[in-house]
Amino acid sequence: MVAFHFAWASFFCAWISTFSPAALLPVIRESLNLTSFDIGNAGIAALCGAIAGRIAMGTAVDRYGPRYGICCCLGLTSPAVFLIALAQTPTQFLVASMFNVKVVGFANACGAGLVFMTITTMLLAQDCPDGNYVDLKASGVMKRQSNWAMWRAAVTNYRTWVMMATYGYCFGVELTMNNLLSQYMFDQFSLGLQTAGLLASVFGLTNILSRPSGGLLSDYVAGRWGMRGRLWALWVTQTLAGLMCMLLGLVSRSLPATMAVLVMLSFTCQQSAGLSFGVVPFVSKRSTGLVAGFVGAGGNVGASLNQAIFFTYAGLSTPQGFLWLGVLSMAVTALYALVYFPMWGGMLSGPKEGLSEEAYYLAEFTPEEIAQGLHTASLRFAFESRSQRSSTGRKDASVRAGAAHSTATPAHIIAVATPSV
Image (cartoon, rainbow, N blue to C red; front, top):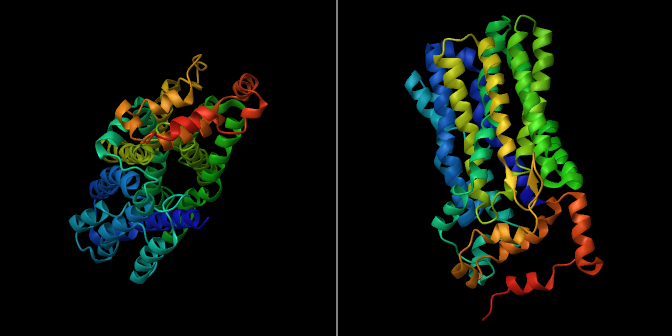
């Protein structure tokens, strides 16, 4: 539980440090004499800055553990948050924004808060339920794996790229909205700075319920329909988010209607982000962190493209940008139909007969690596992931295996998971 609380607290602090400047854009715009192109380019830079960072953090998490990833990220990027306050020109603002997206620390507090977060995470949190990566590797419980093998497993799995593209139009839409809404409320409805910021904050505040509810919904449907249920729930929710984005562009003359649609957009958009990560952990066990990094980077890639195409260079008004962003979001969401797990099925077809979870996850290893015992964690995960079968599939498997073996790890799993001496 300690690690869980450090995880959400770190993400909370990162979010504040990232999007606090966006809420002050009307003031920053006047102070630095920023044009609409300056603001758009700064937004694109801020979003692009996290793309490489997310992939690098995914590699670091798989290789060294999340604690070191958080602390290194904090030490390298937190100075940019402070530099924003000292910016005197558009160029300085753009450069500072380039690195603030992945900051993990109390950017809304004093500098000591950043140090506090680093120290407490390193001392009190741990990398995984079994302990810290350094200790597990030293004791021989966790085997050292090559970075190339982890990268190969991630980039050669087409599901990584599909989830990366689709995440760009749920989380990517969310990032785009966070960059735009405060300024949009200020300009479109002639509101005061405080009122515009307060109304725009509604979009982010719904995260308290929407994102966790997405994860809960994903787990609930998986309990009945397995992975196919997760994919269908994700597609339906993200399609609704695209529809709400279109409506946001159509109700731009009414503040009450805009707020009503905005609440529905925020809930479905953020819920679909939670639903996405109900699928991502099952793409690859060997490269879980790297796949998550690629998918997370997809959110920033999508947001960068959205900001550039619809709100910076295309010459569209902001409501028109919302409309076409919704259209594109709904189109990209259709890619979920391509996600297929042979042992569980996909949206449009069921599983293949005779293919098991063990076969899927062990395919990421060579015979030599299996002989070295590098596959043991994936093998255990494969057994646990049988929960992603539909309820009918689980019942059929239970009948075939017998009640005595349905709740325990089968003997052949234990035998294969234990390398011979």
